Each structure stands twice: as structure tokens, then as C-alpha cells.
Image (cartoon, rainbow, N blue to C red; front, top):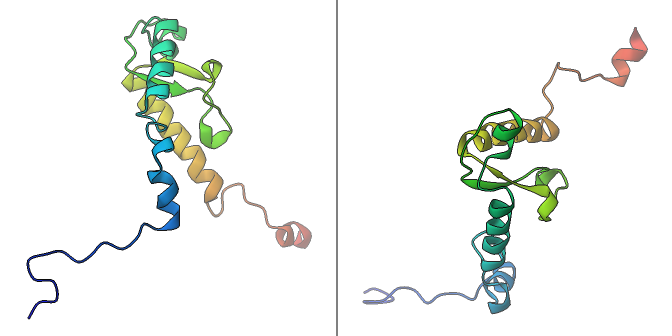
Length: 123
């Protein structure tokens, strides 16, 4: 006979890490929250809904997203001077370049600009 007939197992308590995330004071604090949406709208209005990288290259394109100029992973902040309106095409190119830099930081490739102290002493 089933241990929990017609029901699911009882839910365990949330892990301590998740308790803080589920706290009511943290609702809306992420990228979809009201403070971010307000900041995003302010950046789009400031940049007149035009892609800034395209504008600097002499092109005109409608911006679809707001992007960090200096990525947060590289020490950037959410301040207005570090945010720019950007089109999807430019955002994809920029994101790929940032991902490549991040991959190179965390996993340097063997044999590429990697010097070993023992090799330099042996020569």
C-alpha cells in the first residue's frame, strides 16, 4: 500500500539559503522588479531609445535593452553612468565578447601565453 495515498509527499522546510530569497522584503529586487524597471525606463529616455554603440559607429538603431557598460562580473555597478540603451544585435556581440573574456579569466588555455617559471629557468 502507498505511503501517501492520493497525495504528494509532505514538503520539507526551505533550505536556509532560500529562506532569505523568499522573504517579502526581497520581492521585486531582481532584474524584473520595479526599481530596475524604473531605472531601465530612465536610461531608455536619457538615450532617446537609440542604441548607443550603433550611434557611436554612425548608425541609427532602436534600442531594445539596457546593458551594463562595464559588466558587473568585471566590477561594474548599476549606476546610471554605467548603463546604456542597446539593440539586440549589439548586445549579442558584446555579451559574446564578455563571455569569452570571462572564460579566459577562469580557464586559461594551455600553451597560449602561459609561462611556467621552471621553463624560463631552464633556458
